[in-house]
Amino acid sequence: MSNSRAGHVGPSTVRPNCETGTRTPLRTFLPTADGISIDSVYDPGAVVYNGSPPSTVHPVFVIAHGFTGDVDRPHVRRVADAFARHGAVVTFSFRGHGRSGGRSTVGDREVLDLDAAMRWARSLGHTRVVTVGFSMGGSVVLRHAALHRGVDAVVSVSAPARWYYRGTAPMRRLHWLITRPEGRLVGRYGFRTRIHHRDWDPVPLSPTEAVPRIAPTPLLIVHGDRDGYFPLDHPRMLAAAAGDHGELWLEPGMGHAEQAAGDGLLARIGDWAAARAG
Image 1: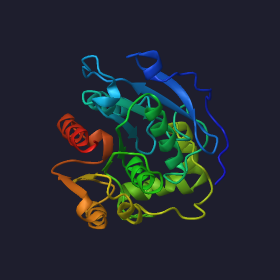
Image 2: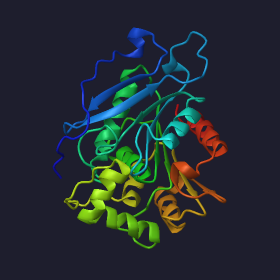
Image 3: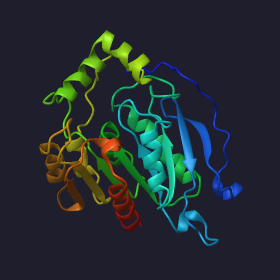
């Protein structure tokens, strides 16, 4: 797919934390490997370092939001605030979302966006990186870990196991939004999401195919038993593909993605990641 530039773009002017010693949030635009500018935010976190460099004490969480999200959405900021209690946090808007450039490929080339954010996190002085993705972002963190080494733990929340799933009403509406011209207009003006009009060519590696390639990196799969988008066969397929190196949490009463992830669940994910990432 081609990716035309759209939205506000700008160069990165940020120096690494190891050079500046800053503990203040940073915001910049990161270039991806295919030339898209990605709106990104770094939060050093609320934990106390006791004079030690953050890279030797706590991980950095790189958060991959769901489709139609962006770095400024309240539910994305809430997730970032929760993980900031466990370490530093990098959030970003996928291509075609918010102020980032390009157009959304709905999980395909978004692995390059995540890779740019992960590399930025390392450049800021962190030696332990955890990627946490929700829904579309959940599929992206799985494919990224399979294709681009460099993360220390992976958490996938409310992710699909296979492409082109239309078995629920929300997913049928989502396919209309993506595949129809009038749907893409709704996406642009109603959800601040610019969607590419071209089909995948080639079809990317599916989440289930990606999962076995993540080992031995620790993997956590989280899914709600009331998810209206993807029923429980999706996380179970992912867990089966992961084998012994993956862990599955089926959350009673939980719905879909960031909006459904309560503070208690986010705290448990933060604890799990901090323990597994190094």
